[in-house]
Image (cartoon, rainbow, N blue to C red; front, top):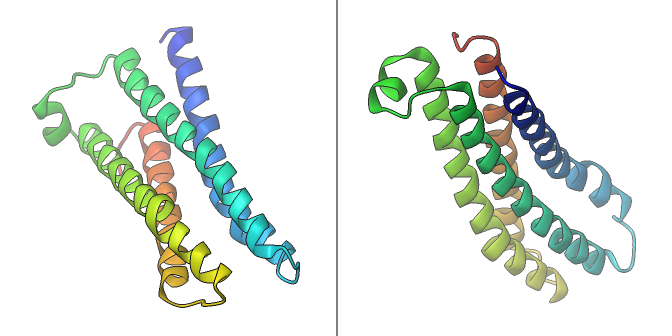
Length: 159
């Protein structure tokens, strides 16, 4: 393996840690920390908008380094590889989960999150807040599943 492969994997892991860490930081640190703050909605909005930008940058970097990892490892991009080998099937699952994360993130960031903040500003904490919360949780679970598959792949790809 070349140094470029190891640098690509290292970068991939750093961005995965950033992505998952950011999703954990908001509900575990920010939300409890601003629970009684009078500008809670503004802080939540500004934090969400800031993380949204960096989150999408991280997802783009994860896509780029993931594809680069496949290429630098010399894996074939064939149907047989992705369907007939255990390692290839795990890579396929990881790719499918990644597209699920993109879809869930898009829905969360561009629809539920915005609507939930609008509801909170209007003093109404109804359905969109619940949808935003659950889409974020689903995204975290998908990201953790992807990280687990990445761990299995790094150990030879056999469950």
